Image 1 (cartoon, rainbow, N blue to C red):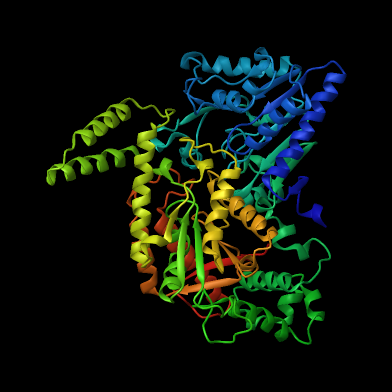
Image 2 (cartoon, one colour):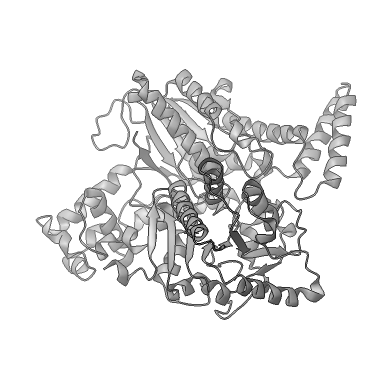
Length: 632
């Protein structure tokens, strides 16, 4: 049954780490097999965030397991054009930074399209690159990523399946998605050199990697029609291609979204809920109006034997949705509500909201944040990172100008602040896109975001001592690429948890954050709570953890366990709270492929969730914030 939906073999791993390690092991095996035969191993290499952990594992295997790359010849897929090889954002730099400089590969065996090829000779250079691939004997194993528009390499939608290595105009969506590398969309090259689709298809074996927020395009490439509008769909025609994805990237596949269509399943309450909700939305009916014919005509006849009547099934799911809606996210005091998402006691609770960046609290759960405070709970916010790289340079000089003017206004000696302003202006005037900010400028950017976060807490009504700036070290690289979580990060987090002993913890469960900070922050919280639980601390047993989504996506309605509604006035109040973060308004350095401002995303997403509940027959609210409980 599965094969009738998935037209390419798909291997699903729990997370990006497990998937990357599995592919690294496959590459290592191929390299060693070729070494045993005294043959070169020709690897087609990809760049971007997707293969970073793959390359990290290959480096580890080289250093710890003796994996040699002396017989490896690499052919890279693409490069921006024009771009200097030495530029931090060039794929030449990327490959050397993540792999080539860390293993024993012969530099003569490295082949990457050159972003410095002369414009007048670039066509001939592309032809020569094609000839190089043929000269080495073709690619044994090609590693691919996939863009959100379905591109492979930089073969954008509309690329011919017969295309070869060439210069291509980058799709605007691709440029927006890659803005995080350049900080400014205007600095993202409009052109790139890419190996063509026909060249990719000549590889003996292909492995495509996809993680996190690529679920929608993975489903189109795997289950949809072969079309040049989804370039990755052509891989359905390859004799030996496998998609390696994590669970998040698999969520739009039929086996995850509608598993009852792919074979016999265990009808758990959560699976019944998922099936009935999907059926109602598909037919544009309320849950209580679904009929037996609706079930039988949509491959859900098995459900009809579970209850005495269709209405019993409908009621079961309706009640599950109804009972998830609450205006009391901290639990309703002096009330016995068996199906309520949260406990009534204790009340008030000590609540700790973990915010990966200094604005995720108000953007992602601002309505719930304010409601918890208004209902008398002892609410704290733990800002996990400084967020300093997400502040534009203009804000630095703007606030330094203010500091100089403030001191001048009140007769304070401003010699030092004037010096800092002049040095900052001089540095920023010469700053290139691949330059890291000075420690002083990073500190100023961090201070800007800290002040915005403090102002938000005052706006909500928190006590001054209830905001905690953790400044987790993994984030403080000054660059887009972050370090893995460390023991220091875990200790800082455990110390705050131990100090507060909260009954409720909220944290960002959004793994689709395009620069990975949310994922690391979540792993740090999870590891900290696991360790604290292992110590046997009594308070940990009574600590419930609720996950919210960040600015990038929302929980599927069938997953939601607590839905907190907002009135129109509360929506506006949340909007004004988001506006406090002026450094993140109008122009956001790291917004991924979504050009909307954060307040717009939040309002549209929360309104959409409320609309889904209403379409299913529940009360119509202006907006709803959604949460899923994590058990540990």
